[in-house]
Length: 464
Image 1 (cartoon, rainbow, N blue to C red):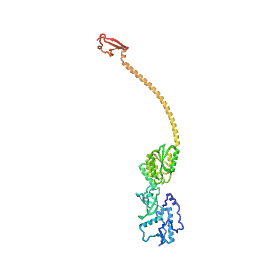
Image 2 (cartoon, helix red, strand yellow):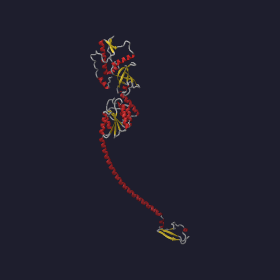
Image 3 (cartoon, helix red, strand yellow):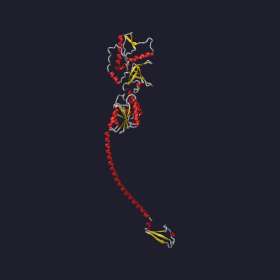
Image 4 (cartoon, rainbow, N blue to C red):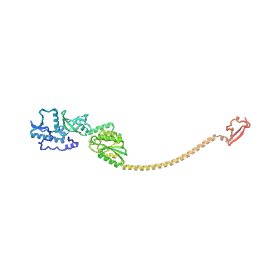
């Protein structure tokens, strides 16, 4: 098993002073392979350091240099005491190429522990299988490196050529080609590191697509009936969010879509939970986040799959990742960024005391407004009654005047008005007016219409 160390452990061990080798070194060290046997030496042996003076030896620092120095001194003391030098027991018939490479691999892996190697990245490539191949170089030399698929999967992004990094790995030999190489388990960039590089690359891509534009952010509902939460069911962030919601707005429903928030597979689980809340259409606002941690712990919220799930969510999203100083890609894509999970809960729901005060104010305003509207209505009805009465009177007066005018015109045109001035109209028995003398036959009866009645008459003899 490899003794792998985190960055913090490396810095701690690197700062510790190297241990002094033991005084008694005659016994063979456990690190010396059983492949070696003492044989007569042809010349005085010279102690060699297990790690070379350049490249890897310098990069090992306090963590591995003491161990390599101890091993070298043990071997030197053993050779000096026995008067022999340690060489490989080679069969008389010789060795095959595979046996030589296998023995060299055992020698290298048996002497060198896992160590950090510093250098610049060169010719970094990622094969279809997922394995990564590259070289580390400095001003004096270079070493070939390989990072297997399972280890490479943990890289936030691929390093660029020329980037200064340090790799934790084991020196070994690729037997099929006889190539000396470093099998890396971890790769860290100096300065802002691979995480910053991955962050900048994804941010630039999302900026180009407009997913981080401020004008696409939706407003958060002021009074949500249901709040969705995407976080770990075992984390403190969930307890903080629920506690704040229960204190501020106890009538609000809470729906949890649990997901891992760190580790392998966490980004996919977070994205799946966000889409689940969106399809269910059960929440008015969605809180996505977790508590604080290192950049590695928070990295799931810097993955593209999570950013796109937040951008595609039909529900407004509040991002609440880490502490106030932590910024993630999820914060840039979400509709609102909260510095902590508790602050996200405060932004999602209103305070019940403020709601009660607002309701009391609205009630008072409603009563006052209703009273004013009723008073205005009564006054309007009274004024309308007066206006209606005046309008009715004006209408009747106008109608009377009109009728009188028409009556006068009819009176002027009436035949009776002519008769009242002394005229008379002869009428035949059937009622038609006799206008010509020829219509009056001798002895015929007719009526003479005067102003106040009809006078019966008879024709005696017509007068031509």
